[in-house]
Image 1 (cartoon, rainbow, N blue to C red):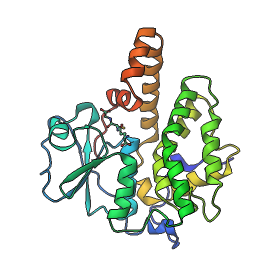
Image 2: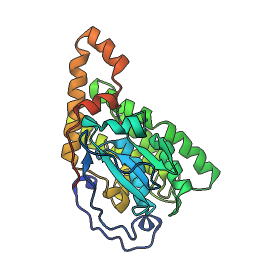
Image 3: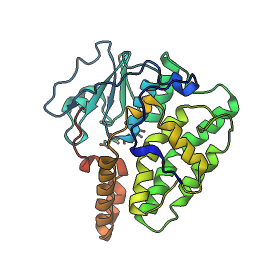
Length: 289
Ligand SMILES: N[C@@H](CCC(=O)N[C@@H](CS)C(=O)NCC(=O)O)C(=O)O
């Protein structure tokens, strides 16, 4: 079976006029801004500029970043990259008290939470709609949005222990079988694909490496979804080096496993270290390309 093209560089221009190519037209490779650290001055906050604050390696931040790209909003929404290991104090103090990424500065307000942000970007900004009107599809979309965390939890539980690693990927395969008017979760490309892509992008190579489990074997829908996603320019431009991302994840899990050895530490970790928080302590620095 062919492996999906996680590691292949695909041509930048897509020629056919399909919905997904609408997500690609006019997208030229963007020069990403440098990463801001504790030593960096803030941008001129609340000056009317719309800014999306991200970390280049955060999967949650990748969601609104993809949405921005696919709607062709590169000129309208400026990217600001933050070093999560060395966050500028102004980020928490002056911009976003939750001190997380992603955050969107828009109309003198700051909003967070990646799933809320992708919906907001889709409904409040111009560009191709990424959410269908069909009530059946919308209902299914909400179901899928609310199971993104469960997908992550199940993959992580399988990587850390003996849980069946296939189950979370079976859920994806089943979900991808629901509509047959295209290879994406709702048939055509939508916010649901954007919600899952950053996580599948990380977990497919992770389970292949750690569990020697190829999640695409016997899952034709998932295989085709991954291939189709890799053709979407607005997504491709957000993808970081797969080996680097794999290294980050493995480091996180190594730390987790170590903490799990000790009962006291384990209790402390369960209480205080949700995966993203552990992540931030062991992120490598990634600077703008
Ligand atoms: N539920 C949030 C999660 C965001 C999140 O946890 N981001 C991580 C980076 S991947 C973060 O900013 N962590 C900083 C911290 O927890 O201190 C969302 O969907 O936006």
